[in-house]
Figure 1 (cartoon, rainbow, N blue to C red):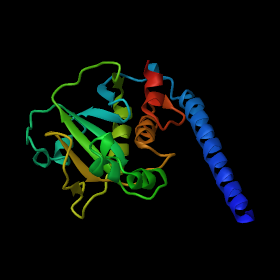
Figure 2: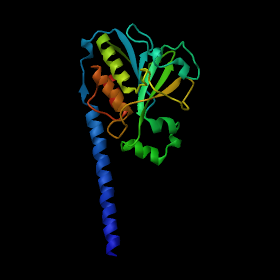
Figure 3: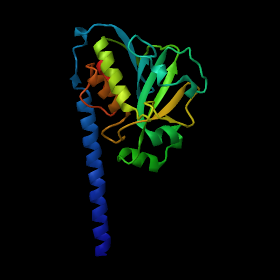
Length: 227
């Protein structure tokens, strides 16, 4: 009987810890996501156009494929996508947990082991790139005009997120993709509760001196500052 009571006490403490942790996590996510950084965009020149795009959960950074300072098609190859279509104009970048990307094409495919590894820093990461011919602005896709200096900083951050082979090319991952115009590459860092796909996108904006949240694990924390 004592062993049962002791076990129940341990379980109740564990459950209480989880509940308190989730409450604190949710509160921190809300409070820190509405604290702005780099809120002086009007001071910068408007020389390049980019977009932030969300599927309702995950944020992508969408950049023009070719500009005078960068041609992304030199590294993110058209031959790596099923369509092989080289007439696209934009390229979206999304960082995330490799297990989520490759093993969970639909939420119904999500396994506990995949979620557990992602949440607790046990997996690896990947970059998901998607080509677009045009971008449609809506509540989940915001147009942002930035200076050349900001654009260069954004490029630097994105480039640093990829892993490269000995020839200096992003390491392509042979995998089933979501469509005919996307591909996966090996990436640096590890996904966890405190550094999510949206945290990565938010950090990219911060590094480029663009409006961003102090910290956010969710896409809404990013879009809040572009309303």
